[in-house]
Image (cartoon, rainbow over the protein chains, first blue to last red):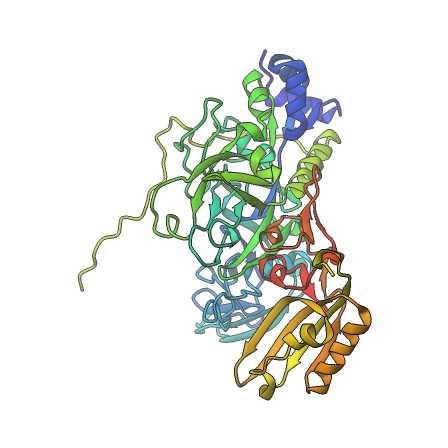
Length: 402
Length: 141
């Protein structure tokens, strides 16, 4: 017998909802079976806390007196370039933006000490941030310069808008070359000295609803320590990725665009980060509640690390050259256990996404729902699924004739 | 004395002045004083300067005599204690540092999956400073 969102929300309001984390759900289904678990459990919570480069924040600074049109001008926050191609005082701070004078990789590998992700963290932490701008001046916006401190509390709107978060599964990175390489997957030692992975596996949001039955625009989520919403499929959403018999993708697949009020978020769950030799980014805390509408969702949310596979990719050659080819398929149970086998050799595994933090996020979301403080919102539509034909594309480069 | 049983007498940073960089000096620690050492880091630029981080092993008195010998040659010796620290507020327990820690000072606790830092095992190689995206691993002088 299927449940509805309305029934589940009624139970949440009355404080009667049964809420478990995706980790706890594994044992619930093992003990009770999927049918009984579906009846018993109302919501399963998930979580992940990892670097998500396609993240950023829209802010509206409020108008200066006299007015200045930042739109079309040049604007920095703590020296970091921010996007000003919008209306007069709307800005977008991208997580990977850098300071103009950052040496980048001129001395390799670069440090990338401070970037857009750090600006967002500082804003959310309530720190003053320096805004410097030059503009061209118009009749209605005469000013040409601005140099001031801003603070999140004084801004008009400030909302996170992340075009791609919560990747459903991801590569495991190794380096088959003879020298250390510095990647967005961390430091990779030569001759497959380590294997780095970045998914929370059995706690990861989209791995618990692999066909996106409850995932889509309007679904209410945990974002950066506050409340957010799914906007739609994220950039590079690729539901047609190969899957195992249980429907779980064996490589990077679905993604989500998400948004939420920055003022209600916490610097604990939005962290500026620097990947040596690669760049700056934002570590985002994301958690999604999955309503257990029926037996299939109970079964899906009971997925465990042993059942989730990922592909081992060489980041010294195959990845940069965009060449296909997986060196091996491994499970998250192997990855979290500390080592994997590659060509008969044991390789230490290195996580890049904090599993202990993912567990805390799923736990916080569970507490919010159990306390009746967080209701589920049925998405207006669901993300394009495995049979939709929706797939990601590579760039078709075409020669440009001058 | 077997290396496995030699007692650590601490770590030192040795600064070589320009004129001493191309002289074979450190080998005398062993040949003259019987001191064993583990090279944790060495940055030697010929005709400029050199810096070496050594962990000294063996008899305490012999180590002191060895260091006096180096001082006498004009090398600057700086003892170091636990010079790598972790900023607990910054650490998210992601695990990125595990890629580079060769000595097991950084390790994952199971099943909590939290990353623990044991300063006693740390040899101050500073690799974790590079690998930590959150800048949680810090060098204290």
